[in-house]
Each structure stands twice: as structure tokens, then as C-alpha cells.
Image (cartoon, rainbow, N blue to C red):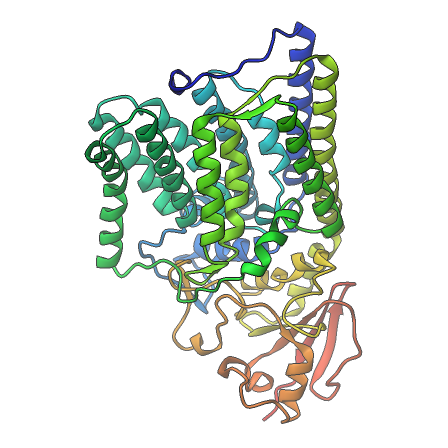
Length: 520
């Protein structure tokens, strides 16, 4: 047990009723946290509909129902968790249910992994489960980074497994590490990075605490790194890759994300719950009831430095630094000790944690339920599209993104991509970025693909159709009025900007479907 490495401050004996209350509260919160996924056919997460569209393409590949515009091109990409699992699960379930089951499994891996890690480190479970529930619907997860969520859940189990054998001979450590490195490499690159960073920080603390020689410490770190180096070599030899080019640092956003992290839909709730959690941790630490153990101090310091150092956009993937926050929130509680003086403290702590969890959960559930009708409407609208058509996606807003103060518009962003299944259509926004997804547009249509982009502003589309577009318009959109058969305009309704070119066919409060009468 790792707990033999450092003294765990145990709480004074509690009456059995206190433990029962804590277990009951955790069980109820856990059950409530799973309800949104269980009760919502298509979770209203930003990227989720796009991932679902890709699952349809993969599951139907090689069948008579295969989409004519996309092809599957497998390579060793470190971002394939759902791409590998969901099509296999879809042999027994519908693609929609298989994708939702994958999301549910990801949540169970996250919560279960946090509990198991704490059990391995402390010999008991105490606070990690509550931390996991508070962050189960944090921004990266509610925005639909499902491969990352799944990979992070696996990483928690992997860290726990390694710590169980950390004192064993090197062959045992090497095998355990190699197995999980392989799984994480296939699941998600950033999850592998979290795993490697955690064990690297832990090994550095262990070397410092036990005054291990530099040579022995370097050898232990090398054993951790060897499987990763081998997989990178294999990836390069098989034309695999990690995302695309593009590295951007947004240092000005790093303080903001600390208050933005808790909720992906409501800025006020996110800031309030983040401040509440910070105040709770600060007060408990000042009163001496919450303490970081020595290994925890090294991990917390390491994660803080990593958060400051990592770019906001890395290998073409946005919000790379943001993902460090939930990772740290799931790992560090295992290395904390909590000693509540009496029952009043216990009830107060449970009340605060319950309030934070339920506040975020209520927002998520409300947004997801509000989208059920819109998702049903847009799926119904696909039946008004001729099969095999080309479908463009636009927005009535001023830019690619909805207003930052109304994040509830985001879940509609990629809903039109489901036309690839319901209408055998081509939709340029389907995720087809080389290095991330094993799906790509066929050569004949690839010039129109926007592998990782949002909807085009209707004002830009209008200017292009009127011959007034600026010269820097990208090639894939310059002749949209001749290339596409249909146009979805997302966002608040506006008057038809091109009545001679666009014929309204369908719509709801969040979208309008137009037929494009192609210009000669």
C-alpha cells in the first residue's frame, strides 16, 4: 500500500450514523449525476452530435448504407477511444445508444477511478468520490470532449494500478505501465500525458523523500518512458500523427478558466460554485482539517506548473491547458487528509458539496432537456433533404461562435452533422481532421471539408453570394451558392437574407433549413 510511504492523518472515530449519512449522500448524488445521460437520447454537449455523426459513418462503413462522401482511413492516432469501441458496441445496440453508453462508461470510469486511486493511496475512500461528482459535468466534459473524459477515467485506474506495484521489482512495474500506456495512447493523447505527469511527479517525490540516487531515479523514470517512446516510433513508421499543427498560448485566460471550469453553460453558476469550492478548501486548510500530504504537495505544484506552461492550443487541439484542472481535481484528493472535528463539520461539508454538485447538475439537466425538442425537430428536418445532398451550416450570429454570455446556444453547433446518417449527406463540419479521426472526406469532395470548424456567419455567406466578399475568404466557401444543395442557419431567426437563392423548408427556435437554388 502507498499509505505506508507517508502518514495518513485519520479522522477521529465517528458514530456509525455519520458514515452512513456520508455514504447515503454520495449514493444519491451519484445516482442523480447519471440521470442526464440515462434520460437524454442525445446529450446536449457541443461536440457530441459531431462525434455521433462519426460513429454512424464508422458503424456503416463497408455496408450498403455507407455514406458515399466519407471513407475510413485507420492509422495509429492517439485519440481513438470511442472510434474503436462504439462501432463494436453498435453491433448489439443502436449507434445512438452505443454512443450514449460510451459516455456513461466514461463517467463511471472517472468516478470509480477517483475512488480506487484514493483507496490505493490511503487504504480507504473519503473525499475523492465527492470531488469527482463535483467535476463530473465540468466544462471539458459538458462540451463533449468524450475521448478525453474516457481516457482520463482510464488514467485514474492506471495510476492506481501503478501505485499498487510501485515497490515491486522493475519487471512488474514495466508490464503494468506498458499495458496502460498502450491503452491510454489509443484512447487519448492528453490522458496519457496526465498519467505520465502524475507518475513522474510521484517518482520525483519518492526519490527526494527516500534520498534515492540520481541513477536509480533516472532508471525508474526511463522504465515509465520506454513504452511511450516505442509507441511514438511505431506511430511515425505507420504514418500516424498527433493532431495537426497549431500551438497558441493564451496566458490571459489562465486565471479566468479557474472560475469558468465548473459549468459549461452558465458563467454565473460556474463562477459561484468555483468560488464556493475555493472558499471551502481555503477555510478547511486554514483550520487545519484539510492537509496535503508530502506527495500531494509535489503533485499540486507539478500540476500548477504544468497548467502555466502548457499552451491553450496544442497540436491543433483547443483548451489543452483547461484539461489540467479537472485532472488535478480528480487526482490530488487522493493525496489529501481530512479530519472533521465533529458532526456539525461533517454536515456542513456535505451540505456545501451537495450544493455545488446539484447547482451544476441542475443547469446541465435543464439545458439538456431544453434541447430534446430541437434535436427531434432537426432530425425530422433531415427527411426534407434529398439523399446524397451537400449541406452547408451557417449561423445568424456575427461570428463563428455564439455570444460568450449565452453558452446554451453551443449544443446546436454540430447538430446538422447528423444529416450524414439520416440523409446520406455531406456536411463540411464533420470532424475529419487527420491525426485525430479515422474518417475523412473522399478525394472528390475533400476541397469543401472544414475538418474542425464551426458554422459560417450568414453575413459572410450573403456577401459571397452578392460578389462582395473580402479576398481572404477560404477556398472551401468561396462558391458555396454553387456547391451546396441545402443550408442550415443556426441561432436566432433572421429574415431570409437571400430570398432569390434560399427557400425556407423547415425550422424551429434554434435553426432554419433552406433549400439552395444553385446559381449557374
